[in-house]
Length: 363
Image (cartoon, rainbow, N blue to C red):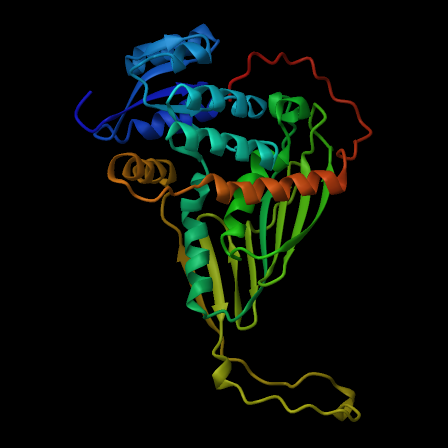
């Protein structure tokens, strides 16, 4: 270990632990070094030992007991996040939790209290706060050129029949925790801290298990635009992932390309209200609007690397924490309300085999 490097232990070497966290940390060798991993699957441990030269463990507690580890990354199935984080914090480790941070807001309160008592940093891997299309959308909105924003819709559309642990409610599965949490987190950053009502439609459609795989979530804040998240594995014809409506323009597009259209309201004459019969039995003003249009090519995403750069600045340089437990608590509270109001997901009528085995299931 070189001076200043942070020694990391990763618990869970599945898609997230290996493909995202381990891969991202390898891009920052001057700041982080993965020294230990834990996973119940031997093949994954061998791979990590060979490629990273790390110590491997089968159990989370073994890794947490490793005195070299300063930062623990928890990339295990959702229902295990809180107990593992509590053990790590009590052992004096800083902790990064994969999303969802928890299933209920009071669990975040408990972890935050333990972190404060231990004098350790607790954060959540909400790296989509650094996703380039989101940053571009927010910049366009804040510029004011599309006027007052009245609707923002985020769509995560695809058709995909899943049969893994994320289809099980007992494992913290479902669209709300594993997809919506990322995009709701983005949208909440657009409206600030304002009271918000929530409505939700959760359905279990084409996947195995019993968790929702089709979600329509609508938020109506006291101040600001209506927010919608559609996250569904049941869409054969996906729509734009971004759709923003403003009083002087709008935004639509994908995570790689955005289309912006706007006009200057000051260039239009004032409207004159006429209450009598419509002239020529026609409605409308027949005015001509001089629209401006732009296509924004969104750059490549290095959000994992950028997330860990910010965390390093917190742990070594005293910078403010990028993703605070309090900011994630608001998101989890809304997801909890959505579950409560909609009840269990509506069941599909067809039957899908669930014979696929779930190992100790690392992400």
